[in-house]
Amino acid sequence: MFIPFVGAVISAKSLGDDAAAEARVGLAGPILGSAAALLPLGLWLLTGGEFWRALAYVGFFINLFNLLPILPLDGGRAMAAVSPWVWVAGMGALIPLVIFFPDPILVLILVFGGIESWRRWRARKTPEGRAYNDIQARIRVLVALTYLTLAALLVAGMSETFFERHLNAAAASSPKVGVGPGGARPAPPPALIPPRFTVERLEPLSGGRVRLTATLPRRGTLIAGDKADPAMGTAFPGTPRLVLSSIPVASRGRATLVLGPTDPTRASLERGRSVKAKLTIAFTPRGESLAQRRTADVTLVGG
Picture 1 (cartoon, rainbow, N blue to C red):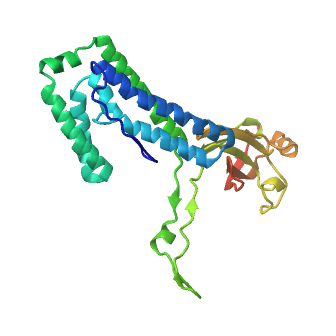
Picture 2 (picture 1 turned 60 degrees about the vertical axis):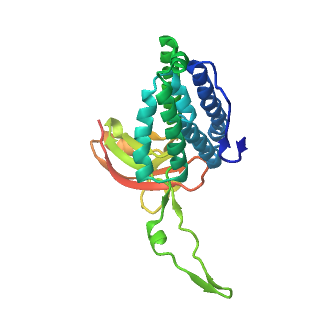
Picture 3 (picture 1 turned 30 degrees about the vertical axis):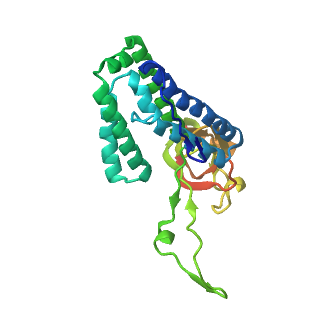
């Protein structure tokens, strides 16, 4: 039975002749679901649209949740081929999760999963239970490796598509209500503040060059240059000291950009003088037009 926006419920008298067959059925769902999540991931990489990024993240999250080693989730069925003790560990981890983060879905999984796990645990030493769990050791190892590999890939997919957003705390804590012709109306929702990039290090190099290291929250374009350059703004008077440079950033994390001096600055440095510059660093996330900016003072050295 298909449940819109949630998934599907499958009921069958038997999921196979033994635990290996049940594990194949249990792993098939998350594998196909993870493959389906690659479609919005590819669309995000091609277009930069945040909708596709969010959709890919949700797909990875749902399939990772489904891999929890708890019956009746697919991860619990896959662990039937490994060891019943994995169910015990899964239930032991789920109980404090339900206590500290109560949720109706988690409660249902705990109740029905507990009943099913107890039934199977009691039947594991019966002749039927022994026959059902009698599978080759290499199959147990193969199922465990497949399970762990898929879980690791899903975690990596979630990490790559994760995009943190922060609510404006001041607006959220004291919302204002306007009054108009129709009476009181609620204030608009607080603005979403995108995650900021940080400048980790500015290192003067020989020849007047500067190495910039920044940590970026997502894909985009990193650009840096002297603030006197019209392309970076003209709030700081003077002539440019550094050549404007930019690099595309393919993924979030650290990025390094090396800037070189302009010809007049290089001539001054060759005469043994140090030159001060006011650096502007701008990061434009992919798919957006507004740049985030930082400024910093740097001393250029010759040699």
